[in-house]
Length: 155
Image (tube, helix red, strand yellow):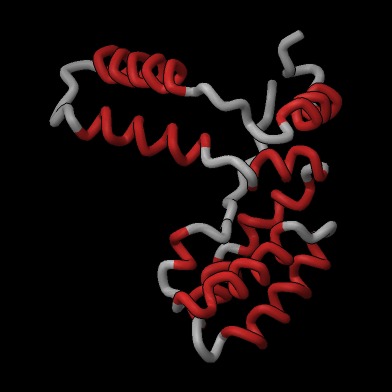
């Protein structure tokens, strides 16, 4: 039986930066990047503490959200750097989820599970047609996926 590693990934994206003033946005994003690019979980925790000390007076919700989700963020740091970089440099998953939600939302109700699966299948087909740009640093990540998950990785 296969298993999955589930992690919540808190990025420097609009969710957090939407609350940050324009003059601070680049600095806050740079400090958040120090957290999610840390080499280890311990280093990331230390950088989160430093972030909180620096920014909590102005933007307390950012570090609070990271801390509230820390147990679900930690598995991210167990991945090798090549896989982590592929995760935090792409919006492909978020884009796909948004498109799937939009497709499902357009249907008020599904008469059967099979009809819902057909909508998802067609939406994924439409998403795949739009993917023209390769994911940055995809080859090192694919190589690392093959090493880490060889028994589950297609040959």
